[in-house]
Image (cartoon, rainbow, N blue to C red; front, side, top):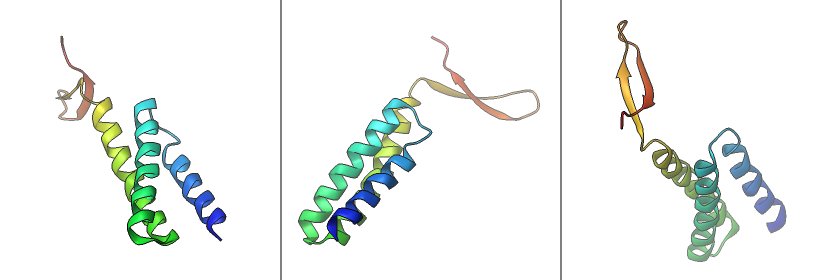
Length: 89
């Protein structure tokens, strides 16, 4: 019972990390693993591990996005459209 649920959790983490940068992928997987460990240890159940893993994956993904966008600036063109580009050095 635990093996199929763990496989689903891992597959979900990889699905979330499918179209991301290396930082986002690593942060997502690290967050999922840490969240699953904490959730499983604190609740003593597979369900707690799954919820912890999902929460950790989301948090890790957001942390990875912030790490990737540190050198990005937001600009507006003449038409008022917002876009992201590298900040001037």
